[in-house]
Length: 475
Image (cartoon, rainbow, N blue to C red; front, side, top):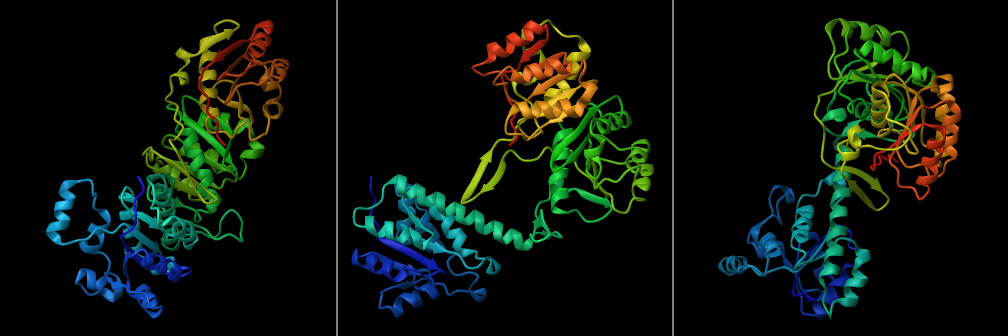
């Protein structure tokens, strides 16, 4: 049902198009309430306007910090007119509902309080309130003012308004966050905001963390946090170049480094358990940017502090939030974090579609490799042996090239190793390359229209292939 406008609250910093909008409201006999600066602008153009002070009976205080934060404004915006109790409260208090809110904010440096608060109130009650937060919205509003606005239109404006608030809060956080030397490149400014996990980690020794250090450390911690066994990961450009699990961290360190020692140099190291003296001794033998772990022994910390340029970081075991956010041009994407908690992430639920059941050691390697692909950029291919990566292919625009890269890094170590793929194999060409390299078993999600062709290639070579039925892309 279309709802017409009868009472408007206007408080804008950017007054573009405001006079034309207000004149159209007056033509429709809409009562206008406006904050001081906006009211003065409208009155100068001969437009009848009520000031906020007249409506609230309360003069602004604290140099204008408190002027619109009053029940006569916010109750008027928030009242659900379908609720009899809300109508009774309005009648008792003598408050008339507001069904149009026109807001845009001050510059972030002025830290607008009343504007975002009024916008949130309008969003919460979009069932009854139209909300304009951009002069570019005025022409459409004016065009439909006489006929009124349906729910889909009000909801669209409400979503636009929340994006405005989110971006405004980000702009304020940008001013309040911890300044970094620069962003991904020296010409980019950057700050860090947060108090949990990587953002709240303690820097125990070494230089300040850079933008890229934080990104890589985040990727490193997410990688080792997929394992319960002692695990070490080497990260470069937010991508693992070596991952290994072992009975102790020092053995895991050696195996992980052996995966790709050239790429590991100058990278970030993560450990999922306390770093002891033995591991610290291995770390200081080469140059690395960051070492991150949940704890360090006193002897290890003493050794690590001898490397002035090594950032030694301690992180809590907190698992983090329930949503991931990515900013794109004009908006945001939200998703649940990709966790290894699906039915298909457990070996006992995998489907053997080619070859025979593998040995216990191969089960361990396949499970290890499957956990590894989750944090490697798609198209991700992991070749693993003895619970360590020996070849990783990632970030290619086709899976064949990722397979070739993984095989190239593995070399002769691919012989008898296992493979995990984060997505299905669209054709048997990748399989043939892996077979030629001497792979002994493969795990992949399945789901390609060419699955039968891929499976048959393994069956012909008597190579075991398992399907998980779940994928772990990382774009």
